Length: 468
Image 1 (cartoon, one colour):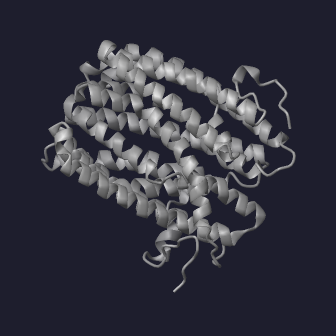
Image 2: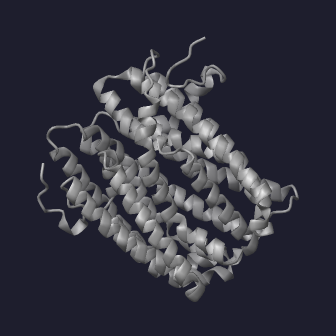
Image 3: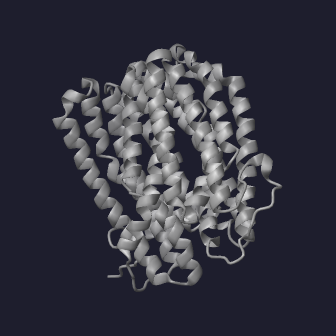
């Protein structure tokens, strides 16, 4: 029985299934080959961007439907628990999903397929082990620490924890696909398929007469996570088996984990930073307020997606160019990524502010009170877009420790400001705290990239000459 080092699933699933998995994703990713590096990065960014645009529309529509089906209170319960699970699932990778993006292109460029195969297999096994452990700890915490939580969060939290292994494995598969320049295979499962499945399952539960509340929604989310990740596993594994021949595996797990842990701090602090305001609103206010705040953030998600699309398209390119003696190609790509990020973000933020009341009104009459928050939050998002995927350049260039220190400090500022301002100004305090923290983050990352790499990653300083 063949056992590919790319962690083939033909052992447990029919090979015909893996060969036929999502041919559209294969076609989309196939158009990225055969061009020069800058063109490939730009095309990958565009593919990722259009996927994220589609996912923004799907996510927005599904969240509107969920809010309408559940009501503002139960929707708030679902939102807080599911956001927490996505964060914990991502953290459960301990940075390995991003370490794959760093190491895989380097091994591929050197022709070191033994280490590449070992990396891909070790990453999946490591992440499954750590995320399963985190799921058990989360369930135990909810069970034995029920007195610490509001009663309406306990059961949903335990149910949501069941999805942690699949969320973490999905993030690892995302990183594997991105490392190989396959943005469609990286993003489609998580950002297109999973939200659609959650909505379809919840509507099915409603049609069958089940009570539609936070618990039911989380059960649907768990089922959707398993279906999505298993499908992505089949698809990505089949693609790896076609690209890399089966062969020996060489594993440097301790070394990879040593590099992944600082990346974990960067990714962890960043992920917490992005969601700190929602979590703090959940800790200090009622589910109704969580629902309104999250709906406002979700409405602005399209602006965020520009940044994430560019990051998806260029991160593995940064990693592949790190070892070059001549850094001019790396610097040029970094400066281009800023332009690709800022101007679309600015345009989208302006458009969303124009139609904000209409979009929030779709969630329900109670949600329109979040419209003024959009102005505060969008200002921070656009400012952050002005430096592009700066932390990706730092992480891929071995500056993950310094980047982690920046995000850790900014996260502390964000949490402290939320704790100070939310009791006084409510949801406005959360938005203001996030905007102030974003200003600090933007300035710190800009200076760090300039000092460590010699690139002025700011949209209005693009003509400045970088040092090689």
